[in-house]
Length: 170
Image 1: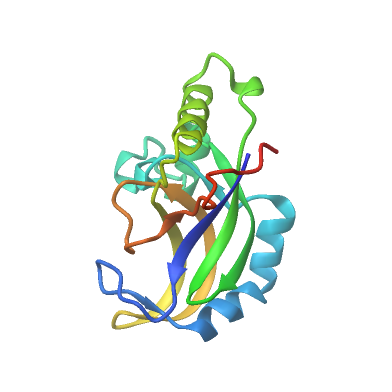
Image 2 (image 1 turned 60 degrees about the vertical axis):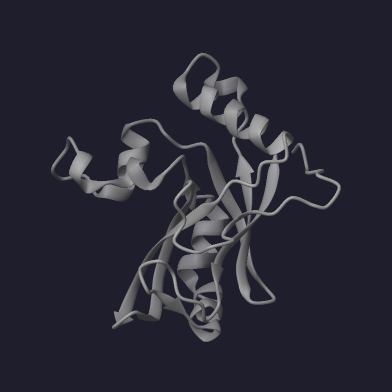
């Protein structure tokens, strides 16, 4: 299932004060890091950023972004990102349920599918590795993931359902 999402607004403050300029976002989309993430499908996501929290890291040498792999929490990947109006948007691709049937991931994927099919526009939040001057991002080094959350950093960041509430079942 492919789902369009608004990920980061351009020139709008997040709840923590963060701001991303169009230039910084375009520069990232033109970067080798972005191209690599999309080619390898390694811009991964899950339910909440909690799966990336260093405080819950049981393994001291494992970076927080890898916690979701260790805890088997990946539910989707981002297949592309693009600028649309005043937003960085993306296409999120939910993983198929079948390989994960009978596991927590399978249950989460089914839940997300059910919520989307019910017309619920789940919020999302991006994981951004960047350089900051005060609250303004001056360079994005990487966006390793986009997670579903009920506490997004930006209002209106989330799944965008078409007006007829249809989506791709791919």
